[in-house]
Image 1 (cartoon, helix red, strand yellow):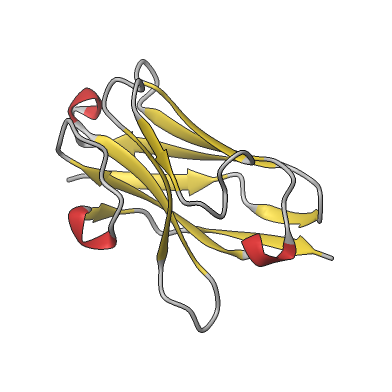
Image 2 (image 1 turned 180 degrees about the horizontal axis):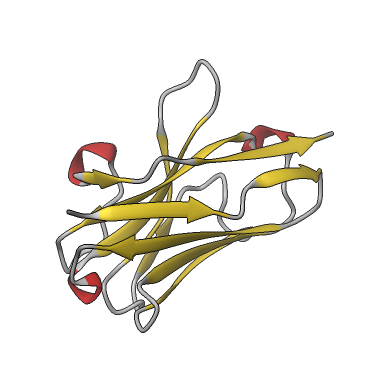
Length: 124
């Protein structure tokens, strides 16, 4: 079955950076749109970024545009989220998700496969 395993989370000071990774298995990676979502305590899970199967098309939430970059390495079945200029409001559990489509998807309901999440904490 499809497995998504996130890594790279941790504690960082405001203004710092982190790079999250998501290793995918059990799927034909090049047939999938990959997304990153996050959920802060007491809030709903929200879209962060997504990338299409080829890597040529991406989408970002307004709150992270210019600071976060999503990329993928199809040879390694891995998607990344480079996060720069982190803010305390970026604190959340970050989830990787996969959807079998050539298009970029930006909502929770469009992704049937999810990882277990990785915690990102940004201190002020």
